Length: 223
Image (cartoon, rainbow, N blue to C red; front, side):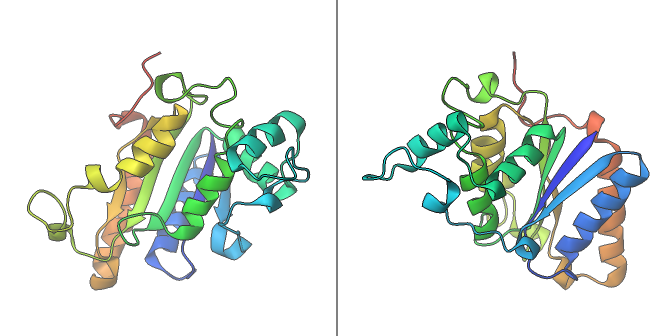
């Protein structure tokens, strides 16, 4: 398999980065190819705009989605975006690896989705969505750290259910493109844990990764 990890944490010594490194080591040990887009290390620009394109269809009025479709059809995407799109296209498994910030993705990862999951490339212009999405043969999942402890979430916690928190990501980004979405792996409040507890979380992640084919998908194209 070919694994794409899109990693969004600014500190290479963070526990979030340790989860990324654990996944890289696990997959490589088992003979898989791993590609990492480390967005902070890359200095990835999250802001979509005219710089995404080498040429514009309409010089007078900028409409982002229309230019995305035109760029896909005419090969006008910038080299930076073409590289990320090829990573997505050639992968079998996509992992979004990030800390939960303000109940969502860090801006740099949201911007990666805005720019890379472009209309024409991954949906629209003849490509469907959800059950008719472009990538029913890909698996995807979220690997995430939180600031709060586990009791802060769920039906008894003020932070709410993760099905709700992650709906825009799991349903609105990954399943939208037709991918099979596996349950998320969540490390709750690693900054509050001991070294032993963090080690237990890494061991739990290795077990999760070893059982990818056994996880019941949250979303799966029915076609």
